[in-house]
Image (cartoon, rainbow over all chains, first blue to last red; front, side):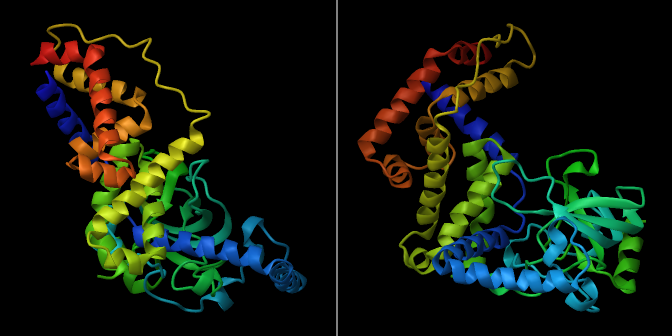
Length: 220
Length: 164
C-alpha cells in the first residue's frame, strides 16, 4: 500500500506540474518587485523631501495638462512620450520568454488587434491578494486580426513605466494616443475579454504598417 | 551565470514546483516571482552558492510557507463532508482515486504537504527537504511519516486498493 501510495503521489504531483502555467516574463516580474521594494524604501527613507518633490512634479503637470482620467494623470500624451517608436514595447523579459516572437506565433494568441490607447485605468485581471500591478488599457480598435470584435476593448498590460527604466521613473513606454499592435491571452482561461492580458516578450509592439501587414497575413 | 540566464534555465521548473505547492496558477506565478526577486536582490550570493538551485528553491519554499503563516488565521481545511468515494466498477476509478488523494492532500498542514511535494515531486532526500524547509532532518522524517499515515488512514487508501 505504501509503495502504491508513494507511486500515486509521484503521479499526482507530476500531473499537477504539467498543468503549471507557462513562464512569461519572470525576469520582468522579479525585477519589477525589486524596483517596487526599492522605491518603497526610498520613499520612506527620504520622507517629506521625496513626497514634496513628487507633489511639486504632479502639481506642475496638473497646471498644464487637461483634467486627469483615472491613473493617466501623470502620463504625458504619447506624442511627446514616445514619438514614432517602432518594434516591441520595451520590457525586461529577456531570456525568460516562453515563446519567441514571430507573426506566426502571434497568430496562435487568443486575440490580436491594432489599436490606439484612449485610457489607462486599474487592471482587471490581478487577483485581490496580488502584488502584480497591471493596468487596464482601453483601446479604440483600428482593426481586429483575431479573437474579438467591437470598436473599443480594454486589456490588462504592464504599466507604461516598464522596460529599461531606472527605478521606474523613466519616460512612459506608451500613453494616450499610442498606436499599438497587441496580442495576448485570457489570463485565467476566460472566454471574454474580461481577463485579457497583453503579452510582453515582443508580442505587443508599436504600430507600423509592415508589422501590421505581417500580422494580418499570419492571422488570415 | 547571470540572473537572466538562470531564469531562462530554471524559471520553468521553479514555476512548476510553485504550482504543485500551491495548486493555483496565479499564486504559483506570484510565488515564483517573489523567490526570483529575492534571488535577484542577493544575486551575487546566489551565484556564488555551491548549489544555486537549492538556494533559490529554499527561497521559494520559505515564501510559500510564510504565505501560509500569514493566512493561518483565516485558512480552513477543505471540507470533505460532501465527498463520496467512487463506486466500485466505475471506469473512472483511477482518476477518481487520484482526485480523492488530491482532496486529502489539501487538508494536510502546509508543512506536511510541502514535505511530500519536495519528496515525491522534487525527489529530494530527507537532508534536501530539511535544507529547503529550514528544519532538521528528524523533523522532516516525523512530518512526512505523519503525513503519509494521515493519507493511509483516509478513505483514499481503500480507493487505491480497489483500483490496484
